[in-house]
Length: 480
Image 1: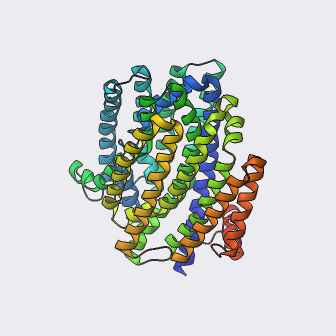
Image 2 (image 1 turned 45 degrees about the vertical axis):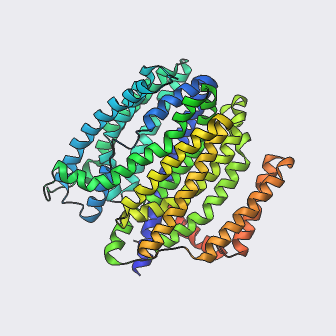
Image 3 (image 1 turned 180 degrees about the vertical axis):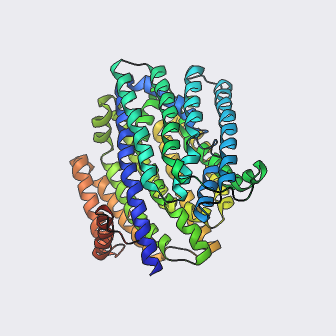
């Protein structure tokens, strides 16, 4: 009975969060289309490089603090005010240090692809925006993903209006970066207003700066490595290739980045449940979510890989057609990321974040090495291949670690069947390319769906049950 309640509750909060994220990512996609069409390939490369430099430090202001807040609120929602207050103070200190560090790194790099003021504005929007993160973490700890989605949608809507207005006034790269800073300021006001009723009401145990950093350090170190690992390809492209290549890669990476964030958001809702399961015993929630991701990830890769070129030309214009080959490769890296997203959450919930951080550190070093070798030879396609190699390695390492330390594993039959279905469908996609991207994609997706049912990776009953739970949530009848 507890398993059914947990699964229904998880389905409900995940549906609410993902509905909000779909709307939010739609706004982000609209933003990227407006900016790309307003700036063109070369200027988009400069814009993307500046934002990439900031994103290199994107999770550093967090330093794991938001994860500590979420965990503390999930364990005891009312007795964490002292910890939350200390977290706000620490967040402000770290944000200031990160802003200075981004500017310093920009100046220190051997090649100055963009003016320093571009990087300074990108750093400022990251710094200001990070002040809202502790408030959003409180909502996550209470599983109030409806409020979390509302905060993101309000901020996203305001940001889109500002970006469209900037484009109508034929704004430059500087103008769009200033718009991001204004949006970051607005996000603080919105997050604080929405989270205020859910803040902890009692002081709880005192929390020193040292104690907070001790708890956050394992998560924070992983966050730093995650930022470096995820964005180093864009920075290396800027150092080893032209601004036009960076612009094309930025256009290809935008749909993939949204896809990856969508998967991370879905997997992230597991965290409070897995923290509780660590004390009360397993309920099978992780296995159900991992199985869903195992079916969905290859399907998304086939769609994005098959429709890469028409998708980019439709969104950004014919000047970005050359980015189609980059997106076709990156789609498979996104699939691997989807598959290891629940694994990473499970490792953190079970106290194995230091092991995951070690895996990310190795992946970062491999990513730098492969990019350094591949970019001069194949440009953006080389950077995309490096991403696929590293994401696949992280998936394998995470699955092994979860099995080795906690004896949690997907069945060998499931892995082999999913691998076979994916391989056959990918080969069919390649063979049908001469008949057009759309025909090839339809054929590959049909093949994958048939093999998924034939090999019993998923059954019609599984699909019906999943849609039934989502339908219950939509109509407000999910079981408590």
